[in-house]
Length: 262
Image 1: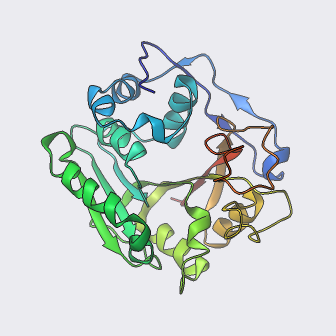
Image 2: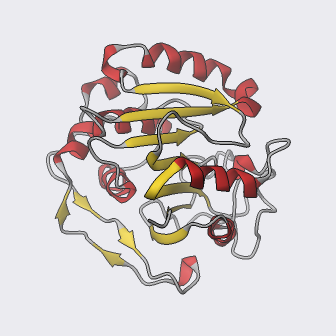
């Protein structure tokens, strides 16, 4: 699915902090045009050549909404956790140009599942088009990068950190906090589990209750700074594995933003 866009509306949704994640009213900026660097990143011909669009099923508006919600902009330093096929990394690479940097972190605990993707991404990052991207291998327990980040981002992998042997999720979240500049943000996208289920479904269904993720990150010192409903799917029953053919590619996903206090 290669997306061609001239002008996109942005639906980044900033929510008040006092109410539970799913109970908060939303303020939409639906009439705001997408910045040119977002449009250019989405329309980058290299994305079609890399054949990555099939990896994530969303329409043009959803994608533009999420990219705007992250706050990534030219000149930023971005750290992406578990980049997989590089769907989001390719976008961030173009958004931060000409002076920004993207560090992709591959947890050693997951290499047995992603060694092929890592090698492919190392080859891709060696090309001139992605010269601002760097692949790092390190323990999942501690997130570190050569420079403090404006944005740390992870898509559909936060729940995986709960399943990695030897990872203390509190220490992991604190390391993300420390990897950010003051005022920097951590963007977490993941498959939603039923309200009240906590972290009980991280291994069996590969889902996590958004309220549980919010509580964990606030405990690490983050301030909840809003959410987007761009990937919300009310038809997802929430009680089937995300790889089940009945829902794969169409799960109800939450998109949360957390800020490190300045």
